[in-house]
Amino acid sequence: MLRDYYDTEWGVPVRTEHALFERISLEAFQSGLSWAIILRKRPGFRTAFADFDPDRIAAFDENDVARLLQDEQIVRNRLKVRATITNAKATVALREQGGLVDFVWGFQPATTPQPRTQADVPTSSEASVSLAKALKKVGFVFVGPTTMFALMEAIGMIDTHLLDSHRRGSSGVWG
Image (cartoon, rainbow, N blue to C red; front, side, top):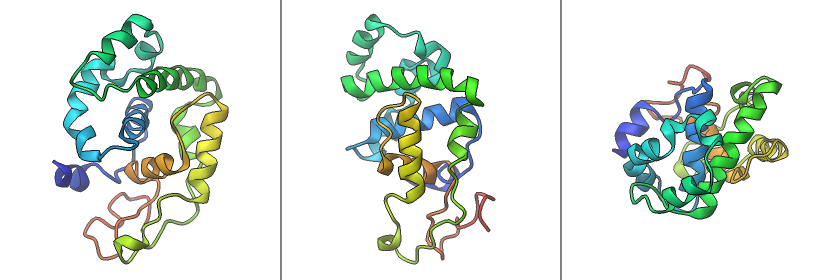
């Protein structure tokens, strides 16, 4: 499961609101947990959170929060559930400023890391700190610098594949 995700999805550019909102939501749920847990529960997350449709989630109420906290198919963390609803509302509101995709991709750095070993891969950057601050200013939560760095890796905004990896440069964003 992890290898399939790594080989086919991680690091591939994400440039639609729906897919980017899903990634932001899953990165928030992953905070403090393993990515394997999130991937195993991804189908349940998609069902529970209306296939990560920001418009539908923005309309969730306390009954939905209660329902989600009883759903064994997802990570049942009240703060993370509420964060997903808050971030859906912020995503909808951000459309007035050009939308989530342009907003997030506007923080793409001029260069990408060049790791030779796993120890060389950073966990945050100036760009991820700036992105986290900017998202918080427009109403997002659970979007710290480390979480946003992980998002930037996952959506192909930066390439932290090791220099000798068969996947290095596969996003088409970085040569």
